[in-house]
Length: 176
Image (cartoon, rainbow, N blue to C red; front, side, top):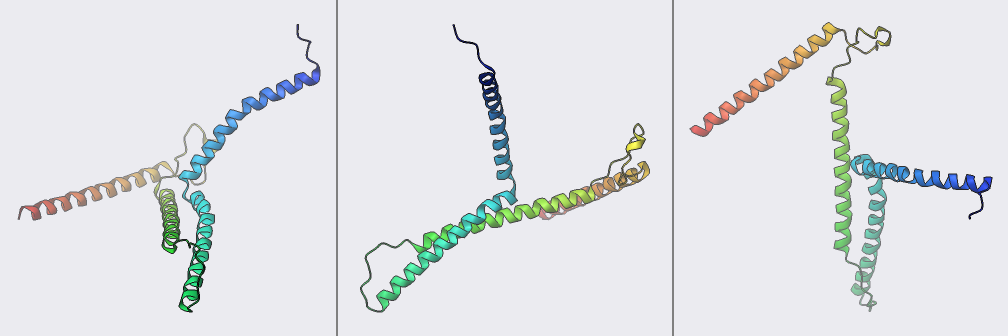
């Protein structure tokens, strides 16, 4: 029969059990953060910058080696037979990283633009009658809210009519 656990062993067993229970939660949180970083263009941009720096350093090193070897050959001296890395492949790698950085920045700009437009054109909350003590200072009155919704409906109708008119013109030009 096993000997009873003393107080210290009991505390250690409880700590071990708590650590094992917290491990899956921490793993899930870490995976969630990684997924957010993959979706976030700014986080991806921050990850690409060190790679871009390393790629540029590698590109400059290879260019210097190739230039040195070509200078040696042009001067009529015998150059070493060491194989040099290809400059064009390093340049392609650098340009590929530049393209990824550009895409991340464009996506971040689009996200920012949409966020600004959303904040500017979406209606503020209308205070509810059940909670008059929690009225926000930026909220609209009901009549202001109605007039804004009416203007949005009018704008949507105008866009719809313009699209219909344009499609009719395109269809009529196709029949000629």
